[in-house]
Image 1 (cartoon, rainbow, N blue to C red):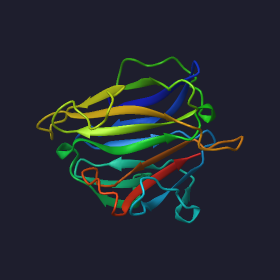
Image 2 (image 1 turned 180 degrees about the vertical axis):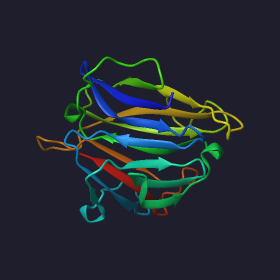
Image 3 (image 1 turned 90 degrees about the horizontal axis):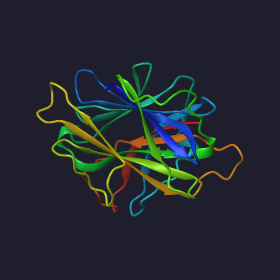
Image 4 (image 1 turned 90 degrees about the vertical axis):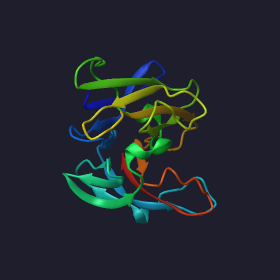
Length: 222
């Protein structure tokens, strides 16, 4: 499998969240978000010291007319790219094969009901497949949290992943495991037309000190 499309099952409707793709030659990951209006912003921000969340300032957002994506490279470099050009980053994290189940990226759905419907049959075979994850009942928004382990199918999360993706490449001594967990939450956007998906990555997953600022890259798909 070269690409997995994340699909959320929300109130008995299937809605497109984004894709996780893999390089054919190494363990690099590429994450894209689907925006219902086809509008995109990207950039770099920082979680202030002592805080565990952040609001992305409009001043830090750069618009894009083409689809940008997050690239988590096998080497540990994290970029925002569009049309194969680096437009933000790099941020430096450990090599993906050296991670041991830490939180490496997040895909936040601002409102599930604002996402585009999956307008075809679910794909379960071939190089491009769909991964359907059911939303927590009664919660209209949520985060798909990605954990990576280059040694074993184990992750630093208090619940079992809804799905584990396994990547084998010639550059890897052992398979790379990507665990995906969905955490439900209250709706983030109170307007009638909510945004779509926010992608973030680029912090060092092995450093959990909330007393130091945490820099990260983001892509917003609206």
